[in-house]
Amino acid sequence: MIWQQIYDPFGNMVISTLLAAVPVAVMLICLGFLHIKAHIAAGLGLVSALAIAILGYGMPAEMAGKAALLGGFTGLLPIGWIVLNIIFLQQLAEQNGSFKILQDSLSGITRDRRLQLLLIAFCFGAFFEGAAGFGTPVAVTAGILIGLGFSPLAASGLTLIANTAPVAFGALGTPVLTLAKVHGYDLNAVTATIGTQLAFFSLLIPFWLVWAFAGRRGMMQVWPAILVTAVSFAVPEYLVSNFMGPELVGIISAIISMASLIGFLRVWQPKEIWTSVSLAGRTSEEEATLESGPITQHSVGEMVRAWMPWAILTVFVFIWGLPVVKTYLNSLFAPTFPMSGLHLLVEKVAPVVPKPTKEAAVYTLNLLSATGTGILLASIVGALVMNYKLVQIVVVYLRTFWLVRYSLATIVLMLGLGTLTRYSGTDTTLGLAFANSGVLYPFFGTLMGWIGVAMTGSDTAANVLFGGMQKVAAEQLGLSANLMGAANSAGGVMGKMIDAQSIVVASTATKWFNHEGDILRFVFFHSIALACLVGVFVTLEAYVWPFTLLVAK
Image (tube, rainbow, N blue to C red; front, side, top):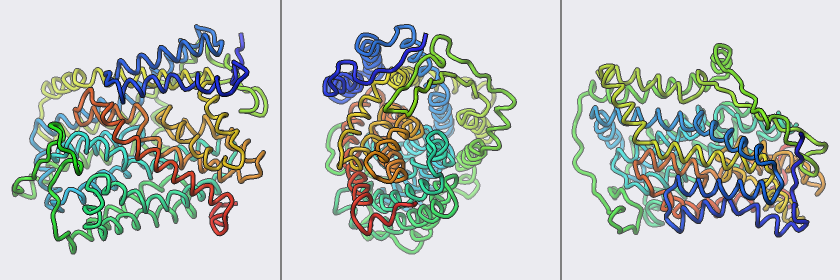
């Protein structure tokens, strides 16, 4: 039996939109205001989504349950698989003592916490986003920052803010490639437009990041280093996206920015060294300001051994991100499992799509090609380099699984919620509400992308979800389809810092369990403010010369 989605089940878009927003509101309120544990909040959100899908939207109960189950499987692989294995590597490094040496070597580049934040959260994180995506940059960089002594909120929240500018191009251009392939956009034009939009915000984000950490005065003290970081990222981002394509935008920009910052710090250091590891103005017990102690001197051999596991991780993640490697590994083992009772039984209808389109529901067990598998192998090789015995490796892995068990459950429940909203059509109801904004559509269409990523945790998923709607709405309003397709992706990146799975990954990496609500409250303002700024920029590109010249034809 085919079930067609209904986007206005009550014949009143205001009521239908408010109802569609209930699951997300339940989860965010439970996390941000009621201080309910993340896995319980996610469970409550999923229960409310099931009730609304079945009772409000008329989705058959079996289909709704299987949609949530499909999302749960996706939560385990690839997302949960990445979290488990990157925390495993972090545990190995901490117990071995090499993490302390890593901390000292980074302090040797600069003892200033603001500059360490730029180097690790922004530059290093951008590299991992460009190579792997799917939560990898947050897991890696938040873990390193907490190892350096950053407070849990600073390490979690600031890593999420930093992981914005590179997200639109994701792992080797996947979000943009998917947008063009699924919805028929001109790949070169939409890539160039995204690159132009985000080049401006890549200039802004490093300043915003340090301001969020150290305040205005603290930011102004290191503005030359921030400017070097920003320009050396934004210029390559613009050039690569406009003249090469989407695949290597994040990686090339990150490497150039990292090298530029390190080179600059060899000849320049701020007059006042910022040693606080907490957010400016935070005085609570858990955010107490700490001061860095004296740097312990280590031999070259010790530092090489300390960095080796992370160098191995970088190589493995980069190799696992290459399309040719993924294709080969998938040819060896990647069975597909169509979800019986759901696959091709849900049908999208107008105005979301020009003609009724059946939704596939297939789970691919691509265990070999999953980024988490590359991280696991890198961790094992790194453990051997750190002189762990096989029995010790197994013991640490089991301890790691026990450590992150609730985080894995949370990710499963949250992905179940996000997948259910997609198949039930409730997320499309929210999108249509934005699409009815007329002349203000460039602004609100950008926020549609923001909501898409906040709900799904993925710029790729948001592009699949709303990319077609953006194109149809733009054509009806006489706007550039490439502009609004790019706006969906560029606006979406600002939703990445508040999506539930990213917050759980950050809290897990910093071992700040059951504080997901604190992280959400901290990053929410930054997320909505930056998304609105992207919306304003897109509106200028739509209507105001010379901004209109920035849209690729």
